[in-house]
Length: 174
Ligand SMILES: [Zn+2]
Image 1 (cartoon, rainbow, N blue to C red):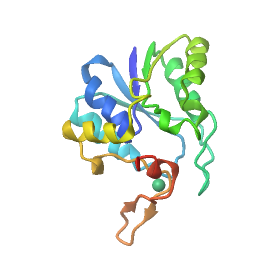
Image 2: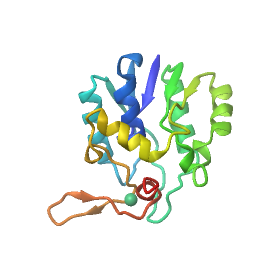
Image 3: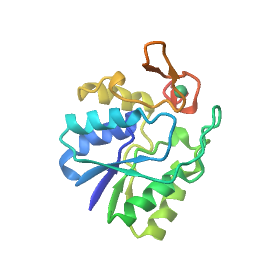
């Protein structure tokens, strides 16, 4: 089974848009994230590109304001995908996130590949985030159609606004 880990952020949305018929499904994981609204964005982009979306609930991982790093989050999701029967997993990992997120680094993912006996595809790993954003828009996905912020604030009307400060918000400033 060929799957994409789809979070609704720019990288995985770009992969959903470009892989569509190459994968059997996209998987969204609910791990108790404060930004669970990203599920809505994942569902929309999957729908737009005719990708079947499957949602699974994982044990809740602790995320507190100002603390962006959830150790081994990718590994947990990759392991769950492998346990669900995936042989090939696409992940929107990007080298811009190397410093903060160990589990975005290719050597880490190489070891996960060997351990889980799956192929982990990271075609965007060395692409600039600004380039991902541009290409996404040429595919008809506006940046407002994706969600990357970890700690959105709730607006008076009930809507959510990106914080502009977290690692995900700042990573697109290049
Ligand atoms: Zn943010």
